[in-house]
Image (tube, rainbow, N blue to C red):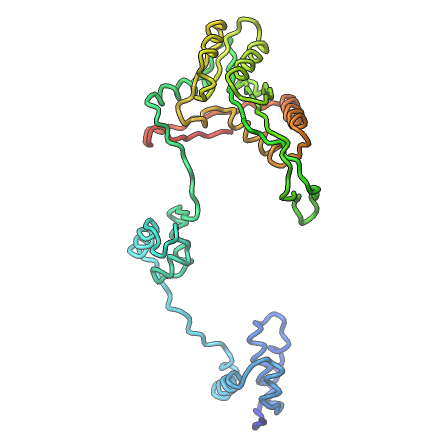
Length: 353
């Protein structure tokens, strides 16, 4: 289909040619310039459609606009959506809706889901959330202690951290149980540029063991021992190891959790025989007060999570080697306890540096 060519003056030809060749102009503006030049050269609609990848409607629309307004008619005329203004009333509406559950069965809002529900833009929702420090996509967990003596026990433990007795050693003690000696059946593919280290999904479990550890809260050094079981006997044996590591008769304060193996008659007999050893129990469901848990998280990341162990003995060897290397440059934990008087008693609020 060939129609009468458009007639262009010299100035229009130069401007349209400049737009068509431009590397900085919007691609759609350059496309419209090429369209008018092709029409002016007498090309058929079919040829233009093949050249520009458009249809009859596109050609007719921009030809009509050019004939009516010349070069000025080639600018886009998208009306866009009506500008939305964030008023205090609208902001309050967004915040109120955010704190209610979605009605579509989802557990929390996304910016787009809430924007669609309220008929506003998702960026407006995002700005309101940012200003109010709301993050519906995140969830945190806490442990509520039901110990009626929470405050007394917590104060006792915290006091050992921030104001320990003079000429006494304070140890944070616990056991990490059921550590698996996992051997990978597939080769570990090493780290390379643009690719993380990769482990196969298949593994062989050689067995498990427990790691007893005592963190000296003053020096940061760790005393460790591995055991195949975690009963009272193993706990008492580890207590004996702690005692033997200190000068004879030195006062020793040990922080431990409420595991039943820590409170048996055998433990009571041990304490009666060693009058200079004092056990301090954390409140129920409050192991976060025990600093050794932070160190256990560290050895989990550094050794256990990605480790390959060909036997339980190999696992024990690598754990003890890590402790030995760690003790060459130990770092005590700086413990700060924030005031939680305005919160529910028993919710952990600690800062560790």
